[in-house]
Length: 375
Ligand SMILES: *Cc1c(COP(=O)(O)O)cnc(C)c1O
Image (cartoon, rainbow, N blue to C red; front, top):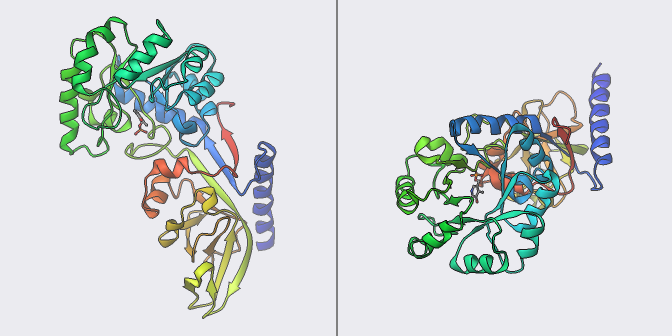
């Protein structure tokens, strides 16, 4: 019985891995399953939360938060998104290739030197961040659509209030597609800077007659005052905090290469930082820090086997992780890092970082499989 079950799950895993490998040129150290239907449902919930008459965009920068910008953008376009945002013109070109003509693609980084050809060829809309960028844009691409980003207190990107006051009239007369700003602490509803940034944004833009946008995922959840005409959800669409109701989008399964028995007094891994006190079964898993599993994660990190936690033992190596599987009824064929029973935010907490960093660090060696959406 036990053997038959073990064989069954091994065969299933190898079949999945084989499929994932066939779909990618990368050497699969495991595979990522990306549920595009869950992603689309997350977007739809945030779209509804943005309120009637408000247009929800979708942020697909950094290769769609590591999940594949083309597949993500196509699925969200099918769900109804008409306005996409990326960080740089190069990313915008890839999203345009995936979406074809029609949807608007905004570039947060604005119009950098050397971008003009790309912006024109792919019909991208730079969010101009400085007087220098405004000048560059009007000189290089007169009549080409643009947006403006203004700084309401984060001091990262955008025109300062005094700069905006100086150019506001001329910029508005050229009919920008969007006037936007970004919140520094929207994931903390009680932070006083939220209200202060809202006030500042209103003072700079009230009566401008141009569509306005202030909110990413966190801002949408702060309430209607923050929504204006366009919202820009990112992390919540991908299943992360602060959108607590988000459905998980990513599953990451990692193959076990071998399992061994370690006797009391024996150590495991680099630096011999973990020593067995009892006989312990140790599974060695084919993924490591080169695949975006941070070394710090080993301190409190664990992998899952059908919902049962299996603690990491010793250090994370470049391509390998050692895991305690003594308590499992059988030696596992694979262990799961991300899925229903351990979310992106759970892993982020254990690694002392944020879900955004876990997602955007997902390794290039994983096989990738997309569910839903026919991407
Ligand atoms: C990344 C980003 C977003 C999306 O933020 P999330 O917190 O992921 O929803 C929106 N606007 C700007 C300017 C950004 O840089």
